Image (cartoon, rainbow, N blue to C red; front, side):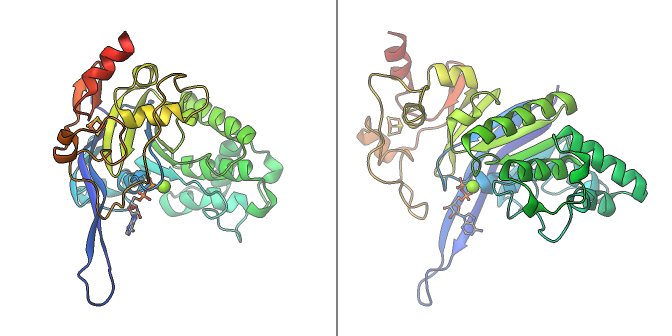
Length: 325
Ligand SMILES: Nc1ncnc2c1ncn2[C@@H]1O[C@H](COP(=O)(O)OP(=O)(O)O)[C@@H](O)[C@H]1O
Ligand code: SF4
Ligand SMILES: [Mg+2]
């Protein structure tokens, strides 16, 4: 089976102005990310703020073009699509953002917000559009009488339901969810996550689910990809990685997550996150890793297969032995 999404060595850099008399600096926001995602499945992308998650989301949703690399969506070259495929491609993937306040037009009623994609992309009659909007509202747990209300009349969780409904109006195959519950209260987070799980089952959606919080992806993803400073440090089946992670950065993230960390030998990263304008030369994690050696400081470890996942650490075998002991 071919995957719904295949990303190969995706890169995206930005030129950063440094004032009048200095040349612009180059910031590599996404530094070579590869993954495959099958229809109906979820890949979680996890890492702390600034590691390139939203940039990756913009590349996969065609909001921005990569500086290099390839992206195949549903069998179509999404970086340089043939003209005939552009329209279908745009319908294949949709995005939900973190902030349900900013992403909904405050001057439009819910009904209009949901029907807008249909107005732009289909020739459905007004009646049919309304029927489809009401149908989608029911799917995401909104009531028909809320059709005529404005976004400010809803709670944060309900607004995120509206954003999800809008994203699904054109029946995409892939939904990119960029921190969809990070702005919500804990109790509401669970409700929205459950909704996403139900919608996935009902509609056969694939999710690229982005979060800075491993606890959030625990129940939603088949695969997990851990990013640090724009690159992938560990990537594989969620069970493998949660049970026995082989990268010190993943271990630190797990140890910082209540209920997921280990009681003994907790890893706490040293110091601060380096500037993405001046990333470490060798291993990206070398300035904060408790196990760092001279080799780590000079040579970037490749992302390589080990124990049923991919990991980018020179000493990953040791963690396999230690944790098996
Ligand atoms: N349009 C942009 N111009 C310049 N720098 C950017 C731009 N978008 C993102 N960045 C930088 O790229 C890095 C990754 O950002 P982002 O993808 O938003 O990370 P995350 O979503 O994981 O917090 C950050 O250092 C950020 O400042
Ligand atoms: S390569 Fe070295 S610095 Fe990087 S994570 Fe592994 S042990 Fe730590
Ligand atoms: Mg982000």
